[in-house]
Amino acid sequence: MDTKALNDSLVIFGCGYIGLALAKECVDLGWSVTALTRNPDSARKAEEVGAHTVLGNLQDDHWWSKIPKGVDHVVNCVGASSPTVEGYQESYLQGMQSIIQWIKQRGDPVRSLVFTSSSSVYPQTDGSLVDEESDTSQASARGQILLSAERLCLEASESVSVCKGVIRFSGLYGPGRHLLVDKIERGEPMTGSPDRILNLLHRDDAVSSILALLQGSSGVTGGIFNASDGQHATRGEIARWVAQRLNVPEPVFTGVGDTRGGHRRVDPSKISQVLGWKPKFPDFQSGYEDFLASKIG
View 1 (cartoon, one colour):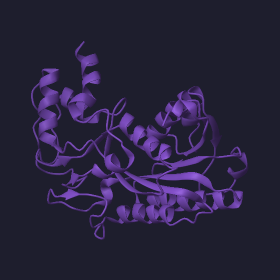
View 2 (cartoon, one colour):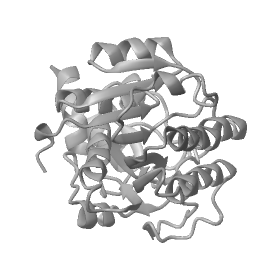
View 3 (cartoon, helix red, strand yellow):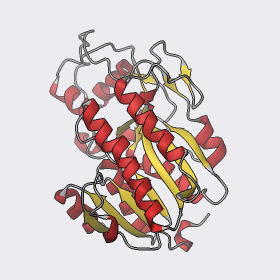
View 4 (cartoon, rainbow, N blue to C red):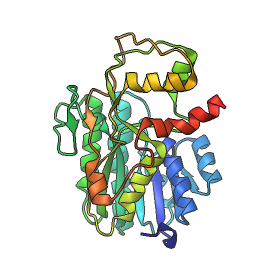
């Protein structure tokens, strides 16, 4: 589908790392974009890329009347207000409830409703391959909240949206988000094990995965999709490669701490097969290369 031939309207809830990049991409495609954020600085950045912005708290209804009519697509990519269980409940669960209530009161369903979730809902720690059908019953407390928000999205009636989709992002990196590189450059020790698998997704590929679902919404009724580069590199492999590219000593791993992200291999086959999505950066080497080249000079 030629997105440049469309003049769709999109509302983005949450204008952080992914929301801002999505807003810019869709404005460039000629779409009408509205972004709701509670952060004035995020609102300013969204306006700079051409989006209409609304300052508001997703949990109340004060913003309802400020969203333009005739909305085609809604993407909920809010971040947690805090890393606590309460922060997750407020941002993800109550936030999704608020969005669904807003769409219902409009009396006009949107073509697609997308919620960006996380591969952290998978509790596996044995290095196994996980897909959208894998068991999530033992997810952490925060993971269970994300799963509840997913269900709210997917089980919304057709009076809300025809296409209802959830995209589970792997670990996000890209412009402005390269903590691992910075630590290696400073010579800091790395917590945890070098053998733990990192499932990664470049910011630009996260945006393109959302667009793949929005563009396919006329023929796809939604569902859950993993978005990951599919490389399944270990922390040690990435650290060694980065250190070599920067010509600095390889970092020392302490072997303790940093149990985030479990130990599993996220399978992105479904989104490729159903939506035709393929990552522009299929491995960490291509994803980090431009940034590292600028540092090396």
